Length: 234
Image 1 (cartoon, rainbow, N blue to C red):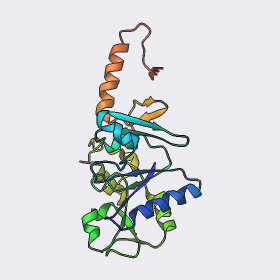
Image 2: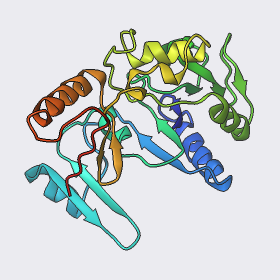
Image 3: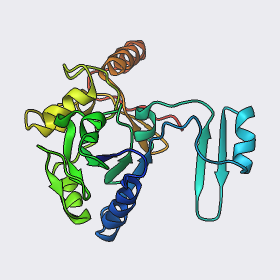
Image 4: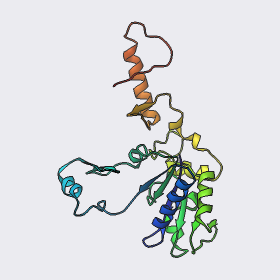
């Protein structure tokens, strides 16, 4: 999945850029999905029924005529949420501690660029404020073109199976042209797990444990032989 992280401090215009990007992609027939990261302790749902239920529950679901939602009463890993998203391009607002996509910065002051991101992860800067040494986008269309050309989304597992310490280290190499998204080890695992039609991200360590355990058990069954294994649980 293509992807971009939009970073900026409060009142910088980052939400407006995210909204414009998802609208632009949808208008072009490219299916977008979005992810909001916030430093607030709680997601804003004051004075709602779900907000009243959640302190007493592990999860709360909501169904409406045209929407549905699921709330967890604990923090989830970024990789858990990325695996649930459906789309061709991810627009992620915030999450500067989670480097899984190239970044576009929206600044109020040029000095903010160094606070927001390692420059090796930055695709460019959008808006009236520029930052020395970083590409600048004049229009939403220019940002969108850059995302479709160079954007990517890593799973956020930080499993180090690719030989880098983190997904952020691999992301920087991809942007520098020294690696590709295919160098992420999760793209080459031999075992895939689908739940409800959606493929889950499996890091290589878990893949090895599951693969060896399943093969070991199946070897005890009559008729077992070499070849691909398919197990379905309805």
